[in-house]
Image 1 (cartoon, helix red, strand yellow):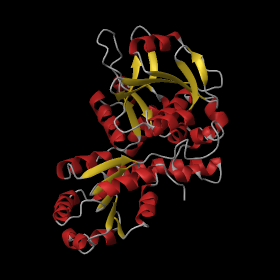
Image 2: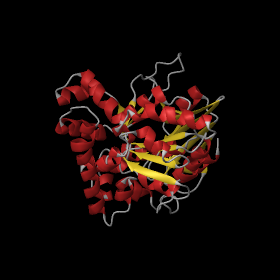
Image 3: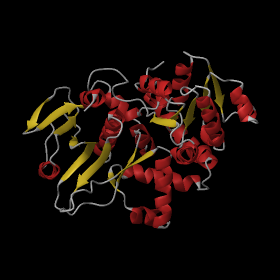
Image 4: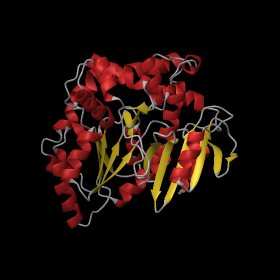
Length: 391
């Protein structure tokens, strides 16, 4: 089994909290990770997409009481959101009896319903973690050695471990089709699959660009409000990231629109029909696709509580990522593909505006070296390591 970086963190949360929610898109490995953790303790696993397992919860209080002292894993919990009210009572009863930790591990493929329901019913009783696709420091190899493969295939385990590039692409295309035809309709929204596919594909073409609702609405023949709802849906399904602009510098004319990324680079390539590295490298979206892959890896490694933004002014000051850790500690990160990164004047203007405590340029090489005064070039894996050990 692929050992995930989140395993130790998740185990620690279970030891400290009555309930832990593990969020992530389908097929990202939540079930595999949960079952690995459950092996080390008395536990029971229920898949709430299974009619047989849902039938066991006809009287959920009775079922949970019959498994007192075990870790109960509830997979695809958004299928039975009414369970959250029951979990609250069971957790509170367990506290009165001295059981304060390790009662429930709930897995969800959609943040929207899961967070709404649990925030109403389990406030103060549940801790959350998100499981991302496989990351650059999880797939092995030295800096640069496997990054191109991860960039092309993305990090979903079935795609990453596929026997060939063709098999990987086939899996990703099936994944997209299943989301459009089955998973999204199960969550409630009645959106024509072909319309949503066109929207998703347009986002891939606009990877890392400012979100322009009017432009997309015109292309789709929809209202701007409807396009905004589609973006909300894809964001809530943890398939798209909306990166907010930095807005603290009131003395500057700052860009107000968010930047939007399809979160897994392999899905970008699948949506655009780019099956090989050569096809990807020759496509106009290559640089933005690389930027999105690096961005997702850095945000996954960032400490809890770090806030992420991009910075752009009307005067041309620009930086790809601002990480604000609080307490006056702030990093800026520029993302460049290639072995000889060069900095534009806009980056230096942004650094002068933001006054960060550290400035980095993530590039495709392995070495770490000064690139300009106060700016270092660094590999993705090394910067992830710095984020993981603490800022």
